[in-house]
Length: 630
Image 1 (cartoon, one colour):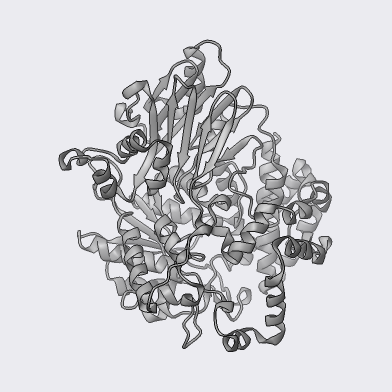
Image 2: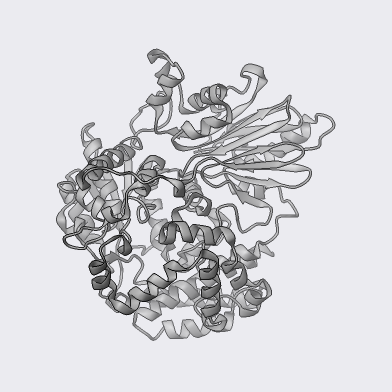
């Protein structure tokens, strides 16, 4: 795996290459032997290989290019052929021109506006010595990460957060709002991290740094995608099918030079539409080159019946197997998480990401899946993470006829939802804030109520103008908006940790834009009332009907309760650590102990919900805090 990193002393009066070099060595850590750097005493840029391969100049493209302008990137392009034509690269040259080199050529031709023409998973950095300007950019919506730190004297960046933490900067304190949002299952904005002064550059953003200021510019607005009007419903299916198939196809080749070298393809495969569609389409393409897809499915160790409702199921293996059998060239592996307890997984994840995350109760199977995919010799891991608001969007009930709306919701719910929709974003937010009972809200999480009140959590959550704007424009699809995304960066960090090139066709910017351009009524079948009509129709003949027409939701980790009971010693040890450490300021340990007592004896859905949203989430946040203040 490749990393880029660098540092810029904003107000340096004279060049000091020795300080820059030692700082870059700090950031490279154990990989500095496989690194290449550029250094002019004010700014230093490095790129390194995690696999201990000694880096050559090809790892820092055009370091001494025209105008002595250093450039480096981590990149995989989707529209490579389009760029080759637009940039005038000859067929012969294209065979040995890397994706990073294409980005450099695009930057030379179009400047910072090149970002709008580059599709794929990429981040890049350019230093302009004469202007003393550093330019950084990220893809529209990819599986990439780019972190940065800024104060009045120093700007540092890296695709690995560990590179910034290695600098041991005193001002990187605990971001209490981020911690509170994680504890209460909120979604922090895409800029924030758990460390104050360390930020993410979200998707669809570019950043220009000068001695005087940081100028952040957003170049793509998914929510402003205009509606597409086509004559027939079938026309949307045809256009969607072509885009979706291409999004999968372009993610099946390694990005190394020579371009097009084949890699071993793996996928996560649940019983749902998104990962099943990605896996099935990938299997179709790799079969043409004599390959097979290795798919991995999480399966329970214990009976999940007490922890699901009538709309869900706890074992996704039967539907995953149906997809694999229909595809014909998919080797399916069940991941039962037996080798990693939920508490062990939490501790391991904190070592990888240096930050608590959502879905702490799912980590045991996720980490085992990634470890198994790595051990099996895979190069690329395909996901279907971003499908819910895009390729498999269920549709808005209010886009249908009044008769349909009333049949689906009934009079009371219909009137309530209609009233909510008529309110302005500001009024709606204030109304929601008024209705919330703080005590009841806090009891749904492990947060210490005193901490929540100190930072005025509820007021901050409901008085965010950007949050109000997104909910007014996108409603339940707002979580996929680029400014709110940090899942791409998380998956990039996980991929680097396990040596896997992670790719998600459902995060393809052009595909997402298309699904947002489709009128909401198209996503619902007018005859059956079934949602997700677009992807269901597109997958006819590709997915088995048992999967394609399934209306229930697969629920991974629904045996979390018995798994926690099986590692009760670890749970109690973790709770003891929280009670004795600074974590007790932020999480309500006595309440978590009460929840743990309930989880040990009750076999029902509420036990799972409390184990997931209160117990494991609180343990992860608390363990992080204790380690943070060591």
